Length: 72
Image 1 (cartoon, rainbow, N blue to C red):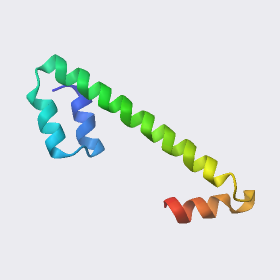
Image 2: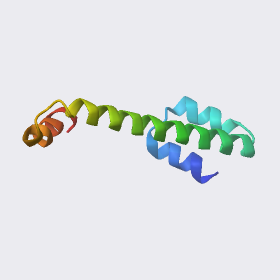
Image 3: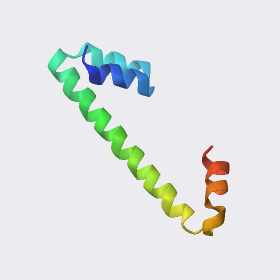
């Protein structure tokens, strides 16, 4: 099992998706797992950027408390 598939397991990918990836030949499974990880990283970066853009409308001294209230 590749490191990419192990990483996907820790990221909380649904069990049926993991089962599908693991049913593929090793080279295809590894390539698909790498692609899914790249997509997850891109999504995380886009969410972070959107969150920061939304917080820019909040006055500076209040950004940290607002961020904590909204996003934990």
